[in-house]
Length: 90
Image (cartoon, rainbow, N blue to C red; front, side, top):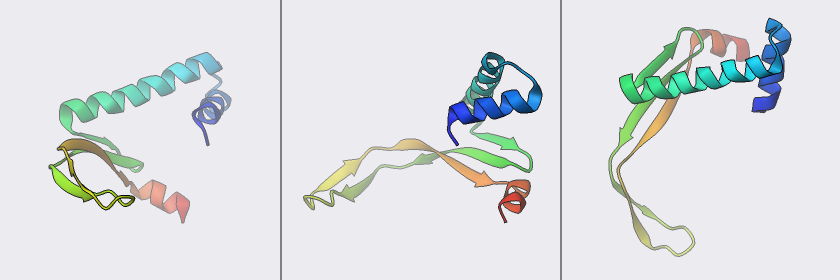
């Protein structure tokens, strides 16, 4: 499912226009990003938990050349499925 498919689905399910559905989806995504930056964690009970996790600097190997490279410290998003999502998929 693409973002466009999801916007269309939201519009059909809620009766909103596609433009309003798109704005609602953008607001939700921006809210998750803002929450991850500020609080480091966003919980959508039953659906998913999003966490902002810091990864320290490390070394990696370029598989093509075999050369060792340094990977700088960075943040990554970690997503854990909630119970309702797990149940729906199984």
